Length: 524
Image 1 (cartoon, one colour):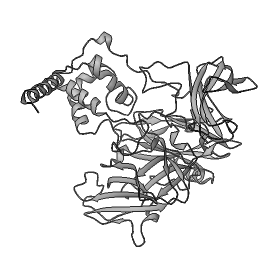
Image 2 (cartoon, one colour; image 1 turned 90 degrees about the vertical axis):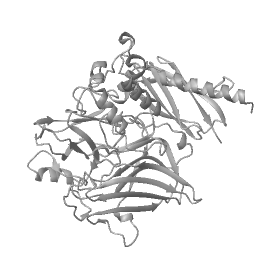
Image 3 (tube, one colour; image 1 turned 30 degrees about the horizontal axis):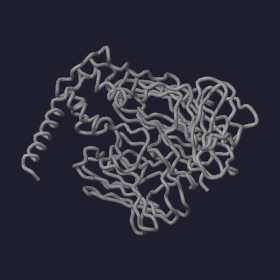
Image 4 (cartoon, helix red, strand yellow; image 1 turned 90 degrees about the horizontal axis):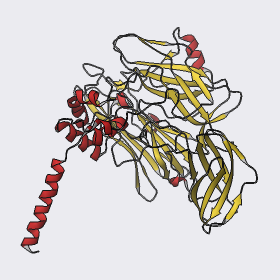
């Protein structure tokens, strides 16, 4: 290469780097949108975070503390490692967001033109999803003592259902968000939870890891800042008639007395043909023969359990679980052809920020694959979370000072096209996308490619009547509904038979009170 040309290239690179280094960031143009989407959902009045981050002044006053927490990757809390598993509701900063925020603070946290800053987000007071079909509330207020201790408590919420219903969405609404740390859901049809509640003189009953019964329904839990969503159409979890919804609430340590009476909003699927979500777990029962779940004092231990998948499955969610000795966790599948499917990896386990994670699209695990779950533990004095000083032998148990080896997998029997289902379903209200315009209607279809049917979801701001048309690639209407469909404001979902349609590209169009369209593909 000509040395003069090389010199020009090097000068250009230096110029680009200098320009990037000299870029000035402002709150109004660059930073407000990052803070409002990744920090404010938890850092606002009445929420669990210690200080509000809702204005420029509030953020500027604690800018150095924010830098420290962000550089340590402690905030925003998101345990899964990037690049392994694609999950909904990621709270962590992208590389660009991280670099922008740190550079802005290093440059002095300039405000910019505050009149041009995006407005702070508004948060729904009753629901992020609309009008629920069923609201369940704790019977009375639970008293949180001001003793700076964690509290785990099970509360029984009778459903009062006289028939089975399929859940389209379940939405936890904290009454006192400043102290509710996270929540797990269980469905009891045995009466065990009611009995344990009656035996305990206080509201609900005490417990840490096991509710005392096997949940008949698989439901992920809730953590602060999580955007709660609907399952895609024709997918759901069964809420049985006469059952009790049991919630385990983790109350964070509080220095003063507080009270909580939280509730749960439940939304039903409208179809009678709903694919039921299943749950499988890896526990000490899946450890190799001869391996006992025991963690001796002053040792590091790692355990790996596994099970073989007997049928093709679509994995839709995953939830590792350990206690205070937890150090790292990983789940993956190995197919019969020896391919590895990475599911989740948590490099630095944090007991205080654990939860369930829903995949953005179902992950197909072929029949005959083996799913593995590995978890490591630190039972030494180097672990600042170790509940025992000096370290003691630790075994399986429900107490905080015990340990657990668990990973839950939520799945469906596989159907062709599952990989294309977008689990990131649209919402009638939005917290994360507060700055975006919410359209008057949202129309989606899955699966695509499809074969025997398509399922659609229509979210509308107002009620009305519509007809549905299927239009082929030549613009010809090949199928039209014979009757007008009445839709309510909010979410409408149903299924359409497509067995008679040849392979090709199509458009599903709604006409009437709501005009909307969406495309799909038929594959034979």
